Length: 428
Image 1 (tube, rainbow, N blue to C red):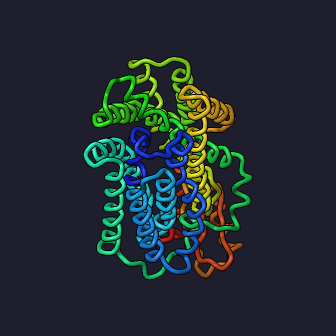
Image 2: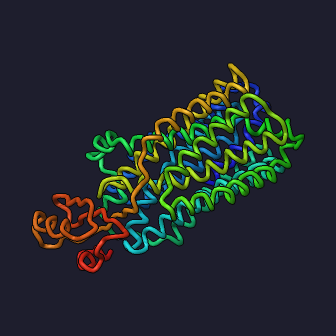
């Protein structure tokens, strides 16, 4: 993810080095990785169930390295687009999440998933700093060569340090199930959350079509020195959103924090679309990144709380696909708007998308403090097992799948009778 993100703060500043550069091709270069990621994310996860995690992960990393090399050696925007598309074809996120399930116990899985989420967030911040620094020293091609090196390091880390999986666990909390997709796509709350992550990454990618050049021109800061501007904006945004997120969780005001953050992003884009100046631009971008950080952290947590029992793997697969499709559409729309209407058009278009998302989010209900427990059915008849678990205080939903030894129970963390449910917990 660090390699994919590093190009965001610098590509707009270096596109004039390519003879065929246009604003539309700039947006396509930024977002095309999202298209190949979206197409391959679930299929590669399913493939890993059949041939094993290791071949898919190593193969995905090697394709990512190949795409980085192609982009580094490209002398046209078309070559860059091909390289970025190949980078996205290394779509191993769902396979890595499945492997986490294979290697961790149920008690430690939430911590493991949280650490991965935190590392992705950290990689975004580091990329905003490292991208300009590397580009100033080595040019845009240097960013892609470093990205290729990071991919190679990823292969060595996986081969040398990650334990081998003897057999993949058939755990629907981590894996996508094609039979569940249709039903989950019709679930109103999940649909709005998927549209939300689509809109969020559309806004981010479209905004980065113009943010680098806007900061450079309005602040009088060269591309070499923009890293500290990004550090201040992203660091300040993270600090600003942290207490809002904590208080929202503590006092069950997640929805208020959620819709307020969307409104803040919308206002920031509207203001930048109407009027710009050094101080105003920095203030609005700080507001934009603070709200973005809050929403990026809130959306997957909300989704995991509201998805039906035993469906989290499929729900997260749809969510990830929506996220990457948002990045692709955002790059396309951002580049097209910049070419047709200038930077003002980009910001106003993003504001419209965010305003629609805000309106759709008004009817959401704050998520209840639910979590999914994986249970062992054992030799018991499924009907009897469902009856026993359903009668335990705090159990909201249960799924038992024919042919599997595992069951999935959605429970209220505040009221569940853990003493009664503990004998049935899966210990793997």
